[in-house]
Length: 301
Image (cartoon, rainbow, N blue to C red; front, side):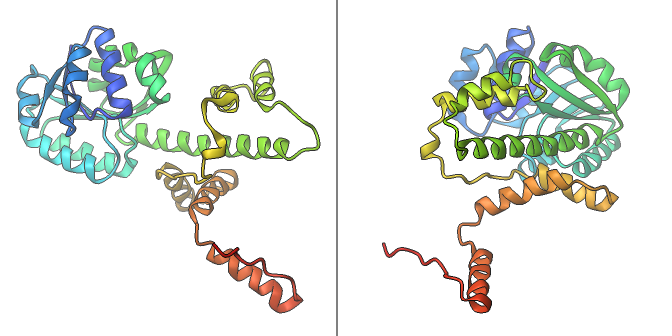
């Protein structure tokens, strides 16, 4: 099977490497032309235009998008559609909003094409050695491409979730859960860091990950961070929010489903990015106004 892979970022290039290792032919495209050498080293073929990429694929074509959600995915998708023929399939492995996937699936159907929204988890390691994939869209197209998912995922690591949008909806909730789990780990280790006991926190993470109820890949990664794979002293403590957590909370509000832990984890990320801390300054000043409490002042540079 030959795959057209569009987007060779951190996940895309790892996915290309695994595709080639599993015997798939890969025609690849990225706006970063400097990646051509790496693609060719992996045994893929590099293209500079969508027209060239599509022309190198046999019908029915299979195009895999591995692009950031939003405008980039949308612009590439709209440019790609007129180049395809009836029976071709487009797979979106990025973290698109499920409502965008519903719209894109309908646009594909109107042209006689198939669209599968493929929520992809496992990080760069998963993309390279075996991922977890949540697939929404037409059953017939999924069954035709199931050997691809089977090859790229760990055992029992893929699921056809249902109709269009269901794959990205499931990945959205997955990422919301991930937010909450990481927040709990961070808070717990922060308490241990400030405790009266001189814990070797890397050893705590190790023992937590062997037989305990909270053992997980995230705990394994925590051990690696604490053993020095990351210089925590140099980390600013700002937690970027890429959108999936917010989408999860927004969906919960629409459906009136309580998500207190996930919602709080999203709020913590926003708070970490607030360098101005205007709200905190207001609260500190209010305490001074009603109770005469000291207001800490910034040190002069």
